[in-house]
Length: 237
Image (cartoon, rainbow, N blue to C red; front, side, top):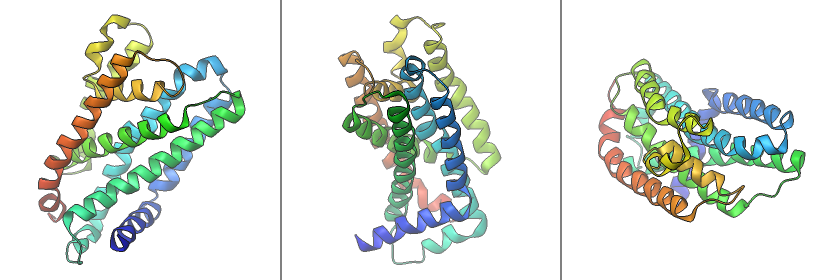
């Protein structure tokens, strides 16, 4: 356990060194400005999407930027000659993503609570953010491990956003009708939105359970896929 905690601490130090944490903090500050200058009614519908965007979609970009910078520096290779396993390194990276995602989410929710005096189901939101960050971290690794470099990864990420993020935006704008929501559960973004939204308002139980099962199954499946490919890809030049 002590060895794993050292790995996690090392990941957080590298995120700071590579300016990932400062960028994340600036983005969180921008979201806080949005919260402050929006009404409570607007934020009740917008904040769950901001949490998904910050913890999920942007989390993938942060993860990819950190991964490719480590490969470029050669620091990732050096980890594999240390007395730690590839699984421990992978889990440490996921844990670091969880810590940063939860911290950023906590800042947004605290700002929302103090500015708009609205109650939040904190326990459910914590569980939701853990699941959202876990599944999106592994989704990010699945994309990263099938790309040669950061530029190619951004191209695939853009395609992913068009396929899964855009439909959720269209749903929120009521361009896609509400009775299509069951189909949208097959989108990691939309399933994440349903989980996050449950912390702020009532939601249909069947949709919440469907989103929960889908994201857990997606995360578990991707974990075994990523675990097999992680070391071979990470030590490549």
